[in-house]
Amino acid sequence: MALSVKVKPTKSRNAFGRDPTIYDYANSPKCSNRTSKTSSKLTLAQIELEAEPLGEDLEHMSDSGRTGKNHLAEDALPIVAYNDYHIDVWFLVSEFVRPEDVCRFALICRKTAEVVQSGRFWTQLYRSYYDRSVDMPPRFQPDSMVRLRGLRSAVIRALYYIYPPFVVRLTLGYSRNPYRVVGRQLISTWHKRTKNCWTYCFRLKTSFKAGSRPARSAQLQRERNSLAFMQDIYMNPEEGCQILMITTDFLKVIPMYNETLFVKNLTQTLSQSMMRYKVRLELGNYCGKAIAELVFDPVCNVSVLDWWMPEYYTEISSSTQDEPVWTDESDWDN
Image (cartoon, rainbow, N blue to C red):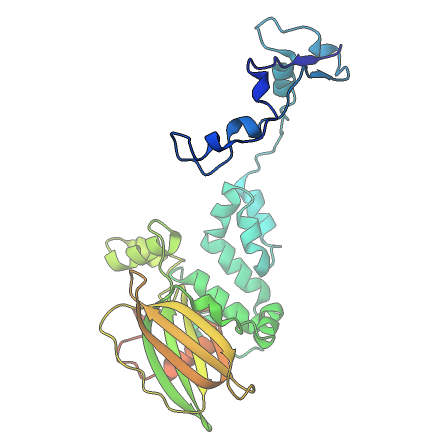
């Protein structure tokens, strides 16, 4: 069956195809900066579209008054069949999940997400790659990994000692991208002397959305109104924290600020000698207004340490901060 569509010509066919006149612009009662609608229309004659026969299903309308096109669209909806496996099956599958595939495994379904949020999963992941020949801090020894509080972050930090792909990632310069610190809150600053250079450290932290897993865990640790905070495997006082390290040849005095500041922008360009770098660190308040700008020139090295790297806690322990690093030192050891 051939499907034809006819378009009726408009009444004023003399307006099609004509050039715009001065009355369309200068003498027009309305101000318009675009061409007239009549000049932008195409010349439409009697258009007849003929299509090839699409099948016998389109010859007649259905009994419910629907056209054949709508009827075909509804019949074309795919019917997806899926299997609902028991959560014990997913626990067995999780024993073969690699550490870098944990996120993919958790996104399969709700049951896999529930598996990843359990202490059994992280304990099994730790035991799969534990190597007693590797020297690790006491917090990551098997005797200390039986606690549920902070188990997830402890396993992640331990994997950067015992899991070869994570160890190689640290040696390949994974922390060379300094632009990841933009938008984070400035917590504290300190500096130290390294050979003939000075290293300035900026401890930064990201802001969590309300209702997110880190925000709920932090709220649970602050309230301490039930035994649930002792079983919170997501407890991590350093969640979302980074240390921006800038190494330069000269000593620079960093002023003290009395308000909460955020990293508004960071630029890294070549220095005037074309042999070193020049780093500009722009700080702003919560409204985004620029408050201060720190310029380091020349710069030997710029790196960023995340909370799961072993060097992060080495820098924290060597800093001369007055505030305690951990929220509860008795339950969280380096």
